[in-house]
Length: 89
Image (cartoon, rainbow, N blue to C red; front, top):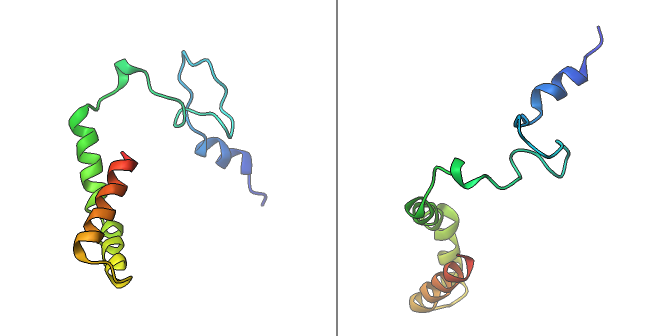
């Protein structure tokens, strides 16, 4: 019994919009192209919420504790984490 790999490949492909002017390739698909402004469902508060959640995740806490382990003072560690977040935004 042979496995139909093309069938599975088609199921995993990203869908293409009807009015799209691009081809689905490994470099360009629906998930990678910018979304049209009229289809955007997020605003300024979504952006703030995203970075707030990103800053309160485990990796942010471990970054601070690692800086303390490298003999930085708490004020220096907070300054490093804050400046990294400011540059990242």
